[in-house]
Amino acid sequence: MAYPEGRYAWTATVGEKGQIVIPKQAREIFGIRPGDTLLLLGDVERGIAIPNKGAFEGLFSAAFEEEKGGEP
Image (cartoon, rainbow, N blue to C red; front, side):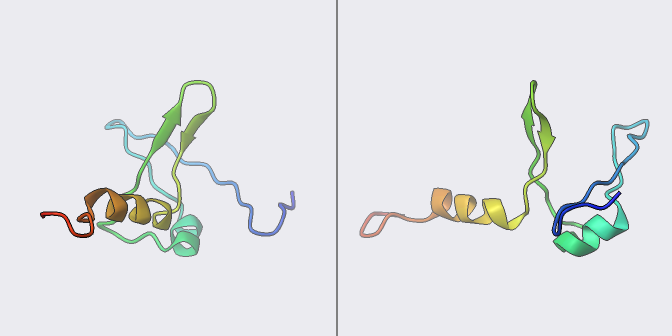
């Protein structure tokens, strides 16, 4: 089956401890390295999503950034 450009589908098996292995091709495409922290988003109707790690770096920066002119 051919997928649209930039779209992929993989499967992963859940181990006894609830761990999954992210397929090698997915790790390579998204630059996922050992020790990286991933954000999992869940919706009981829509499922689980793992957004690109760059998608939440800006959110964290904004949340912890000092207000301009304010006290640390």
